[in-house]
Amino acid sequence: MAETTSPQTIAASHGVASDPAYGAVTPPLHLSSTYAFEGFEREGRYAYGRAANPTRDLLAEALARLEGGAGAVVTASGLAAVDLVLSRLAPGGLVVAPHDSYGGAQRLLEARAARGQLAVRFVDQSDTAALAAALAERPGLVLIETPSNPLMRVVDIAAVAQAAKAAGAKVAVDNTFLSPALQRPIALGADYAIHSTTKFLNGHSDVVGGAVVAAQADEALALADWATTTGVIGSPFDAYMTLRGLRTLFPRIERQQQSAMAVARFLAAHPKALRVHYPGLESHPTHAIARRQQAGFGAMLSFELEGGRAALKTFLEGLGVMTLAESLGGVESLISHSATMTHASMTPEARAKAGIEDSLLRLSIGLEGEQDLIGDLAQAFDRL
Ligand SMILES: *Cc1c(COP(=O)(O)O)cnc(C)c1O
Image (cartoon, rainbow, N blue to C red; front, side):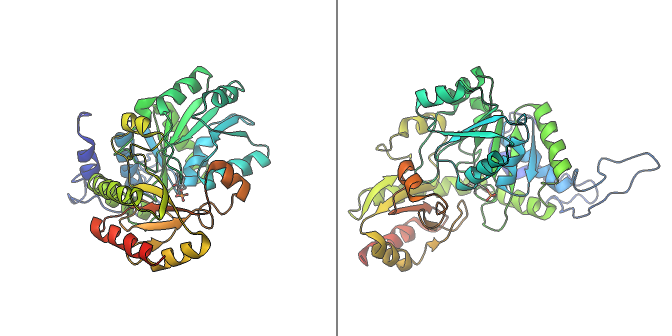
């Protein structure tokens, strides 16, 4: 297919009707762990499932095309994808990560740092002076996450990438919150786009998986080689499910972000929602960057609920359409309480420093009817 093919078409049709055996329209799920040699000393395209698998390859190719990269590696989880990128660092190399990075990524970086395998600085990347000071230490890698979790702060990828490259660092962007449907970090200067495919890419909350897309072909090969060496690859079944989910990425996220905007406006006007964090609201501090850098504002938002712990319990247990659960990006709307759930491993001081109040609730907006979502929130507010 020509590279001018639209991303919607890539998502819907990469690998469709390409089955050489039976002409299956839906690409088959290949579970075999091993492949017959064509003869003595004649290995076919596939030999062993840890190194390569046709189903996993299709997903990797589709993701590479969607992100505008040279190649991709599909991993067993989003954190395995982050760790795979860390494998490209020289021993003891420095990583500059966001001060409000995903909790699991923070734990991974701190655990590797504690073992002396790398060094890490957590920096507010929108603070130009703080970023410049960290870059002066000559990091090997700058990790960006935008929008951030759970406050939806947007970082200027092109600006950070340019400064990082000038300092000799590689740049990785965790693109989980928006997906390539709404943000393409490689076009903005990133060397790697990282995904937890668990979230929007699969979109149905029934797979844990990840992927790294590399801008350059040699980097993609090096990542694939390390994934084969360590065995962090994703399973064929998970790849099949994720490719199936990916087919509907564009209509899902477009619909989900429309509802997210409606929910954000409802919350912004509600007296019991104190502060609403959604990059689509003009009042959001990084709205202008989001408007420039993203193709949409996404389906994630957060807000502070008035009234303390008792109010949180009444409100959360009073919801009927939304489910109290961690994770995000699925067809079903989820709500989580940052301080006791997704960000419970941070100390109260660290949460306060990052601006994560005890009253903060994060929403992942799904595909339910917009009025049902707003109605659900409205009736839960009325219980307070
Ligand atoms: C969930 C998530 C991860 C980790 O992904 P897993 O699939 O749970 O390992 C990394 N980054 C972000 C932004 C996430 O939301």
